[in-house]
Image (cartoon, rainbow, N blue to C red):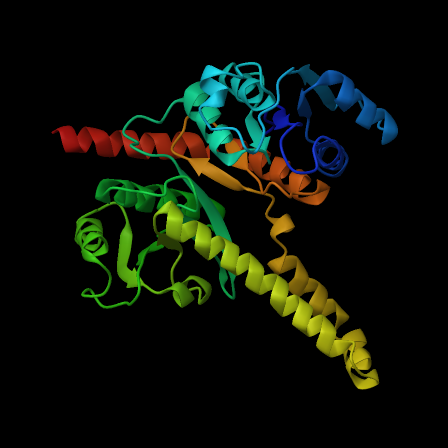
Length: 340
C-alpha cells in the first residue's frame, strides 16, 4: 500500500544539509519514496544542484527559515523557533501532507515537536524511543533508549505494552517475550524501583512477561523486548555501537596483519560483508518514537546519507504497517479497562 511522502528535517544533524539531501536522493532513487526536504530553501536547492539531482517529481522542498541547534533547549521549538525545520516537518505529518518525519537533529527538540504536533496517544503517559538491536536470532527491541531519563513504574509497564506491539509488527513475533532489564534474573535483584516494576509487569495481561533479564540477554535472542528507562537504554545503545565498531576493527587489524590472514580474509569476505551489514548502525537508519499519534524517526546526529536513506525507508514502512494506529488502539483499550 502506497503512503504519502516523508518529511525530512534537512537542517538537522552534524552534516546537514548535504548528507540529508544525499540521503533523500538515495531514498528516492533506491526505494522510490517521495521526500519533502524541510529547511532553508536556498541551501537545499544549492545541494540538489551540486549533486546533479533532476528527479524533482520525487523530491520537493518546504521552506523553513529557522534551525534548531544541538545546543538549544527542547522547548525552543515550542516557544522560540516555531518556524524551525523540525517543527514544520512535524506539522506536515499532522496536516496529512506527509506520512512521517525523520530528523538527525536535536533529539529533545524532535521529541518536543512530535509531542506538540502529534500529541500523545490516548492512555499513553510517556512516549519512548525504541530500537531493535541485532542478535543471533534476529533482534531484540530495547525501549526506552533516551526519551525519558527518569520514569515512574507505570511508564515502564506501558513501554512493555508498546514494545510488544512493535515486536509483533517489526520482528513478526505473534507473542513477543518481554523482559525487564536489571542486574540479575532473580526476582530479588535490582533496586526497590525495579522490583516494584517487576511486580507490576507480572500483573499486565497484555504482554508475555518473562521477568528480569540481564544485559547479555538482549543479544542472546531469547527475549524479544527489553524494557528500561531512557538513562539505562541509551547507555546500552551506545555501548552496543561501540562494541560493534571495536570488534570489526579488531577483526580487520588481525586479518590484515599477515599474508595468511589476508588470504583467509579474501576467502571469508562474503561472511564478513554479511556481519558488517548486521552490525552497521547505518543499516537501521534511526529509532521510532512510540506513543505519539504520528511516525517520528530519530537518527544519530552524525548520520550520513546511507543512514538517512534507511531512516526514510523505515518511516515509510512504519506508516504502511500502521504501527502508530495499532499502538494507539492498544493503549486506548487498556485505558478504558483501567477506568472500569
